[in-house]
Every structure is written in structure tokens, then in C-alpha cells.
Image 1 (cartoon, rainbow, N blue to C red):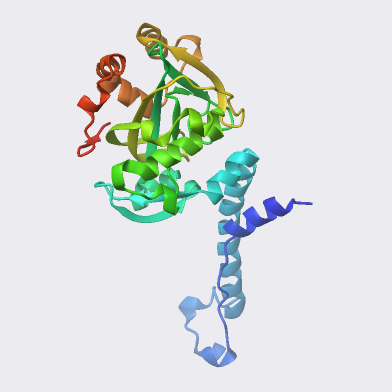
Image 2: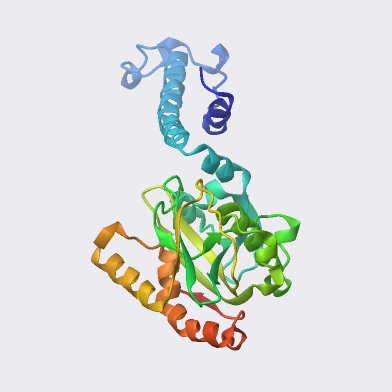
Length: 299
């Protein structure tokens, strides 16, 4: 028997097809049907309507059930987040225009057909030795599983505390929340006022045939020594790297060595900003390069 969760998921996607109401008075006498329709009239018209509706329902059900089967294979934690989390929809100038489920926001079909763009953040957390904390995304992540990326990448949700625009406070609140969720970093180790928003990027990246990203991404930097206890539902591995170690990871990713892959947003930040900003991390001058007025459209 299907579980209640699976039944609920099926009900969300099961198509409902309206059945036509057919009355005898709507049809002409059979003798008035033209000879051109004689081959069709072998089956009564009401049966042909019903048969056509049934065919539509079967085709739609086959497609929908295919999606349900695929989604049923999704990790339970990730599936819950996909349907419960409401991302913040924005336009290309970062104005809030609505909200939608994490599921819909990451469907390439909707990204392409409806141009869904959501707000996101990427945290770059350095320790006191100026090493960057990287994470490898878990194998159960829906988008970009097992790729290496920056410390934490996620979304502010459509809730009051994470919609605050002033000084990107909503995004910083969300970053503190997700650092605890993903990496077990206590809130007191990453005070909200210690995040330094350096800039924003806008990018689009497919993950596979079904999923992808289309994000307006806030880049948040911080230098702190923290306690880390990764959540295995979110994170497969972590490591601190210095600049030279990161360059070696980039080389291996480019060469296809050791199966190393990088997230597209991390690679965009690395290629455009990170090594220049690392100098500012080390000399304590990050505020000198902060630019929250510009939205960098990167490909």
C-alpha cells in the first residue's frame, strides 16, 4: 500500500480532466449525418467523446505518474524541502515579485517557460589561517549532487525574517540558519552582523534534463573559526583549503581527475572574483571591495 506521503504526492500531480456533459437533444438524427462521417458514426458520438476523454486522461496520467515515480525516488528530506520551502521570486533587478516552491523554482521547464528567478546566497567562510571552508554536496541533493562548492549555498525563504531588505539582513538571517542546518555551525559562531555582503551575481545553470538553477545570488564573506558538524543529508564532505590547494582542485576539475566536479555558481565566483578578494580577506579590507549596487550577469 502506498504511504500517506506518496499518496499525497500523487494527488498533487494527478491530472483532473473535465468530462463533457452529453445530452441526446444535442445530436441530430442519425439519418442527417453526411456520408463523409459515416465511418466515424459506426461508434455512437457519445462513446467517441468518452473514448477521446479517456485517451487524454491516460496520456496525462502516464506523464504525471512518470514524474511521480521519479519524484518518489527523491530522498525524503530533500522531497520535504522541495515542497515545503517557498523561495523568493525576484526580477532581474532583485525586486520581489512573488514566491513559489523550491520544487517549481528548480524545474528547468518552468525556469525556461516562465523565466522563474529566485533569490539565493553563497557563503564563503574563512578560518583565522585564511583558509576557505568547502563542502561537497550530498549524493541525495536534487541539484548538483556530489559536486564541491563554497561553504554553504541556499535560499532565503519567503518569511518575514528573511525578506528584510535593509543591509541584506534577510539574506544574512537565512545564511545563519542554513549554516546550522547543513554544517551544524552554531548561530553564535556566525553572528549575523559579521557577514559581509560583497556583491550579487545572476546566473542560470542546468543540472540535468529536469533540474537546474536560475538565481540572483548574494555573496557573503566571513572570517571566523567555527565548530563544524556536517549534516549527512546535506553534506558529503568538507575541507579547508588555501589558495594553492584550491588552484589544484580547479586543475583536477578541468582535467577530469579524481572525479572532482565544481558547482557552476562557485566556479563563476572563483573565475571572476575570488582570488582577487582573497587578498582583502587576508588584510582585513573586504569592505573596500563590497559593491551591492551592481548585479553581475555571469554565464
